[in-house]
Image (cartoon, rainbow, N blue to C red; front, side, top):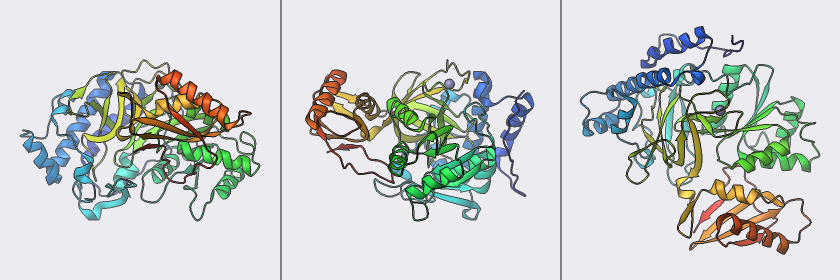
Length: 448
Ligand SMILES: [Zn+2]
């Protein structure tokens, strides 16, 4: 019998939503003392089909753009008979909604409780609007008590952006409402919480959990060494949740070593919210099937791909009333596997390969930047800051030395030989000492 449950539930008075019809499913799981994580496939799919159909009905009745797209695709009513049929629903491209804050809105503007924006590094931002019920009722409805082991005794430091983007506020709600932990809202090096002050606060409040990006976790580790804090003693974390940027298994391992605790990866986006999270086995990310239905499609044709086939990750949100995302093309590459994970969680496993535009083509083969990062991090003399620069098909690696006795030219040659051995491709290596640290999203790949 489970002893842990979500700390709080919120009800919003006089609020009606199409999502209410999904509440009995989760109530039944609570009564059975289980969560969606370990349900047999059939029951998970039944739930997902019902949730997709409720969402289709909702967007059909409340949004002109979605309705027109469905009608043009031949839908006479907003309904599919099986999850496979989801592939007949039109895909949603980023370009269509970029810079347009109303296009996907499915509620009256006065019902909006929170607005989020993507960073908009490539042009205009994408706006997402959440109702209060989205944030405080439905987003917290599915429980994943195997994936999240946080408890009210934990103190969670959240070093993620709070301005505009979802991650900071999303983790804040999750930790406070689901687990009842104390939260230190650090943000990422802003006016009120510069890096040294953030570290001091983590020490003072004995933080046990840190949610941040891979690059900021590296930066915090570096800075704590500089100011004389011993990680594992002065700051003694139990777990780090990484999100925002992807990273390789080896980079994650390095962070585990630096911080002396488990490091797990959390995959989500400002548009779609939570998508997948790593379990304790660290063999990929379990899809959070209570929140999303994930498909993989051929990036060129949009045709659905099966298990183990690599393609673009497409997400349909299941628990949104304000702005549901239906078959949203994430621009991320990966593939799905049926779960045979030793952790016992049955939800599908996602293997993430990175952003589509960051794929590095070397001699005709596409390399995921995470794979190249993995190769680079295998060299123990290399630090955690680096750049991959692809110029006219030729790869240059800028890397920093890390606790090494090698001279710069010896290190450059060691990296070059190792990368050539791993990829079969010759690259050029430059050893640097001043690669820029970032408080934003780390840019590591440059295609010129
Ligand atoms: Zn697992």
